Length: 555
Image 1 (spheres, rainbow, N blue to C red):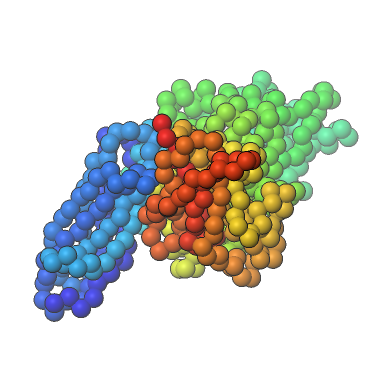
Image 2 (image 1 turned 45 degrees about the vertical axis):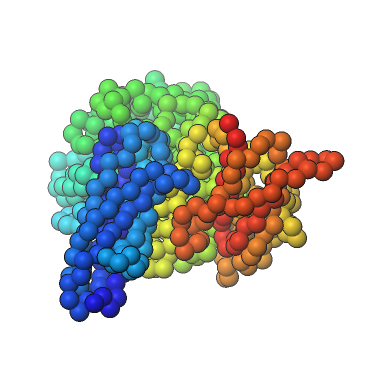
């Protein structure tokens, strides 16, 4: 007799899978049984709204804590996201427990860069495997190792341990162990570097390498912290920087280079008083870095921080693997997150886009709504790292821990983004400018000119489909993504949606990370026509934060 049971966790062995790799799934169970009982576990594999495979396993439920493993070999098609829906039944077919997760098959992690962070590199750190287990549960497939280095102008040192420029005690052994643990989970390790920062003593040794103001004084970050150096690709500083990158790639197992900048200045002077803009040189240095990385790591990646979206026009098509934007004022609205992603996708000709928008985890409603906007726009959000850590500040060591409730919510949202990535981010383009005007909701404001107090419609087109994301901005108290929300958006039930189209619609389906189950729901729809338009109508049963509607066309 089985008194109770639940699936307490669903774990994958990797953050993503390459074509041909086998998925290893582990279920952690808790049960109370009078005596051992035979049960059947079924894992249904879905791609979007369709079941594409299933795995069954019969095992004995022994009671208390128990782990059960399953294997599945997905098709080699990539990039492609999948859902896994789990059901444990008695031998007579009575359901006992359900669970779900997601996974994807990619040729390379940068196709869908779920970027996270590490920043704790203290000596004798011993939790690297456990840290990667947690990150894998969110499908984080790339990690920025933030402020891991000895100095900004000298990344490696023979000292062990060593002090960083701010006095933190760090260990290269710890860094090495974290990289190795990440690689076991198919997580890339990217070393943070600054494209033009050096210490004051280094500047004093090389004053002719620096970047100067019009008054002849060097640019400084902090009064005595860092001095800006000349980032032009033929400068002595960049030659030195590339030599440092060469050492890092030779002496460590890092998977590329993460380049940072500070957003200002946008113009400067060299030691001879020659004035120049920085945008072009920054793009050229990105390209030189990529060339070096490829010489060491054929699949190595380069990422550059376009601080506050500058200089996005110059760097979007540079040889960085995805576009990374740190978001600051005046980009304060939820709408601005969407604008940044869409414009960067356009300038980068389809490159993935990662936003660094810092929201304290205590503002869990803001986190949830911002992620809904970012994922619905086809973007990614660097926010998760360490053990349950979330970024609320640009200095990553100031990360804060998520509550258990927020951590569980993030699991649902990241599962959802992976499961439906083929209609959210991969092979899609934003169509909101024209597409949102074709969507109306009976009795609900969807005015595209309003920044909140409405249901916001974001649309994306792909081959044979269009997505309609409904973002609930009704009754929220601020349109700013970091403006404290004290209450959830007011849920809406039975929304009557009209979608204007001249194309023949094959089917309509709905999914939401806010529902109890992430499985797609097929919606009934009616096709109608009047003198002005041809359209379909369907009912969305409930909208909390974010609903995803996918309209598939015939042919």
